[in-house]
Length: 460
Image (cartoon, rainbow, N blue to C red; front, side):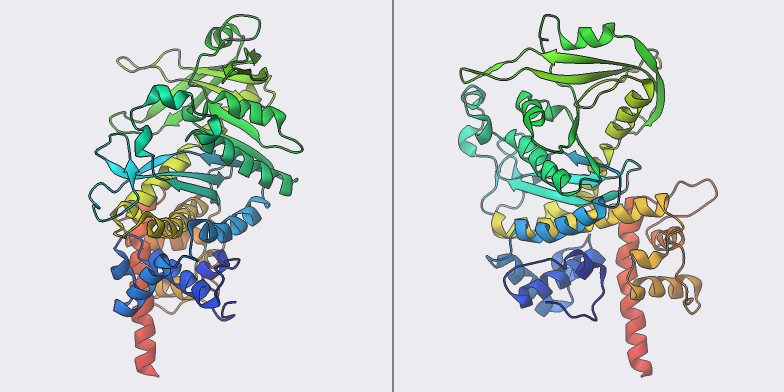
């Protein structure tokens, strides 16, 4: 299938790729490696000249090369990584991909406003409880139907299976399949308020065999079976304790330290009707995290979570909060996709060509985030666990101005070396390198590899 001599990270990640043609398989791996070495520039810049650029465009233009097939290989590698951990969080979310300026791209749909054209991306990112991403389990990309834009009343009458919101249920089913396969690993499906859909709770309650737990943020103050409403019931429940955490900066909101009291209680929802049919009663645990004394002029940070897990102690409630905070990793993943990989700058003629390109960049964005977090959480690992030999040796030679050692450096040392070429200063008191310094540094790494390879050829 592939050359045995090629031991690049791209081949290891895509070893299960099946495009129906060995040459296509090899080309896809090569394009992934090239784009991964130069994630920010355009495809022509990442490729070596017109011949390889044309080969990349032909790859995306081939009907055999689909987003589903490309991600299937990555998903297999992801599942293997998931199986090495006792608990894995499967974080799901939707983001807009804005291609409004790409007038030549066919097949786009309306975004928030009808004048904005693009696609919607809905992936599931598997993450450990200490925030190390293990890969994407799947990724849906679709264009919104222009016929339904602005027709909310008609949209409500459509069966759930035909709505965009069904993506959440499909995502949960996908996670459940992995849960059934990896019986030694507990999977937890984590999502924000957009996933607060009654049918999702029904799906979790009626799933057969080993299932993934749900952990989502509340959007609807639902009526309860027997009377009362969700929020009031949660506020009346006993306090379990107080938890503190650092709230990240976002948009105009500054980052700060937050202290919240935790409450938890088991509730049953009053079953709603859908198209004349009454849905089953659902039982879940509600966890209320409330900031009692916010700083002057600040809105209190208040979250309500729902989970299928039983939560009766402070330790269990605090763990659910910590797991939900890991949801931030998918926001970082989207940031890398859009700013590090520049996927909204892709210039391809049709959505069908965009999708496999997006799939490759999803793998690249995952790797950047993976390297960032693994360097922090597992600093003592050998760097050759995630970097090709030619990569770490080239960076070492350029940085240290010395021959590379026989024993590869530690992972955290190599990550900092690479990040230094992206602006990371490594001063005393500096935080660990972030994704941006790493994605810039990885681009310089490729230049080092090419330069050293050229020098070796001249010396032969």
